[in-house]
Image (cartoon, rainbow, N blue to C red; front, side, top):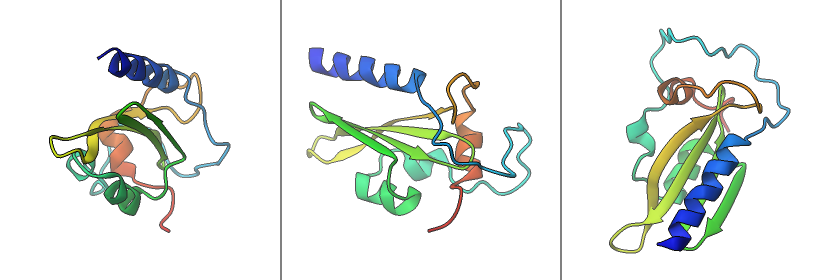
Length: 124
C-alpha cells in the first residue's frame, strides 16, 4: 500500500511538472467548442492494455514503472495524456487512470475530453 501511495505521489509530481516537447502544434487550439467528431473518447483508453494504447496512440513519450504500476505519457495534438496502468485481477496491466496535462509548464490544465477529441498531432 505504501508503494502505491509513493507511486501516486510521484505521478502527481510528474503531472504538475509536465513540460512541452518543443514541437510546434499549429492549428490546434484549446477552445471549448469542438464542432468535429472527437478523434478519441475516454472509453477508447480506459481499461486498455499497454499494447492496445500504443497501437491507438503511438509510442509513449515517457514510461515509468514502479512497483506493480506503470505511468505513461503520450503526446497528443493539444495536450499531454497521462495514463496509469495497474494489474487487474488476472495480473494484466490495464489503464486505471487517465488525465490530461498541459503541453508546456505553467499552462492551464486542459479538459480531458477536449484533449482526447483533438487526437494525435499526426498519423503514423
